[in-house]
Every structure is written in structure tokens, then in C-alpha cells.
Picture 1 (cartoon, chains in turn blue, green):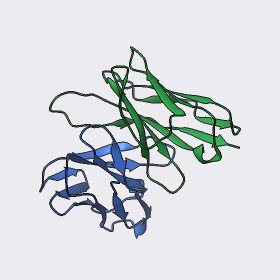
Picture 2: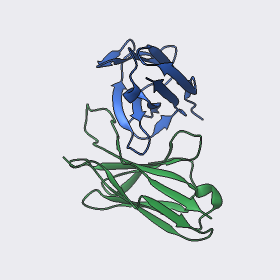
Picture 3: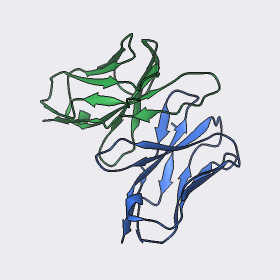
Length: 111
Length: 115
């Protein structure tokens, strides 16, 4: 059974703080890793699809890195804003079919 | 471009009943995947449909079944509902095209409550 772990489970930061989360996944048979951002009462929004060891992706103040050999990915948010408050999910891609999700990290940013 | 839509938004059923959830894919997408998110868990893969055929299934019993239509919209049917089926059901559409990774675009979900 494939297991995807995310830590921490939740995080509360002040506006302007930088933060990072971890996603751990199986290091064998890697195909791709996805990051999603999910605000309450909305659809999960795709942030990144990461496919190569050493990949680094960036979208505004959010960036992510990938280490497929050791089976982890980091998501970084620089200068957190209240609108960054959401649950961040990572998903291990089973060769283009199922996405195996972690439980997510819920970020709360106070102004 | 129209995103993924799901209906209904909320649904309440009683144990033993049957339910049908609906999903319209994003324009241009030919693949639909369904996920169940129980309280406190990440979304769990139920199955995927590509060109009207099941293309992968997670660890869900046969009373969970699906359909994909020629316009790529989809239904999720659950028979003999159990209390544990209470969850948010997410639909995601994507395109199976060579060289393009499996980026799945999600709808807002249907919240099913089984009493």
C-alpha cells in the first residue's frame, strides 16, 4: 500500500512569515508528484506537477523542490499573506492514473 | 473555458439507498477520475474513466460504479449506502495525451451524508 505523508498537519503563522511543508512519498516507481492548494468551499487548485529529481518550480511567492531518490518534496511560501490560508495537498502520481494523496497541511495566516 | 462542475452540491440519503453523483469535465478533457474524501483524510482514488471505459480502480467495493458518456461527463453510482460512505466526493478531469503529465483539475465536490 502506497503511503504519502505530509507534515506538519497544521500550521499557524503571522503575516510576513515564511514557511515550508514536507511531503514524503515512495522513492521507487516514481512518475510525478503534484501539489494542490485547497481553500475552504472551493475546488482544489493545481500548483505544481513535478517530474524530475532536483526539479524546482515557482509560482509567485510559492515554490517547491523535489528529491525522488529520497522520496520527499518541500513546498515553500515566502512572506505569507492571509490569502495563503488553505490546505496544501501533495499527491503521488501512479503512472498517470490514480493520485495518492497525503492528508494535507492546513495553513492559517494571521494579519 | 468551463471548469469542472459537479452536482448536486449536497445530498442526504439513508442507509441502504442508492445515489448518483454527476460530473461535467473541463472542456477538451477526455478522462475523469473520482475521489472520496472522508473526514480528516486526504482524497482517496475510487476509479478513473477514459473514453467511456474504466481505466483503473482503487480499493472500493463493487457497489461503487461509474459511467462516462460520449461528451466525457461522468456519473458515480453508489448502491446500498453505508454510514461510512458519508464523505466529500470529488471529480477531476484530465487529458491523456502523450508527453503531458496527469494534471487533474478538480470540481468543488458533492457532500454526501448518509443517515
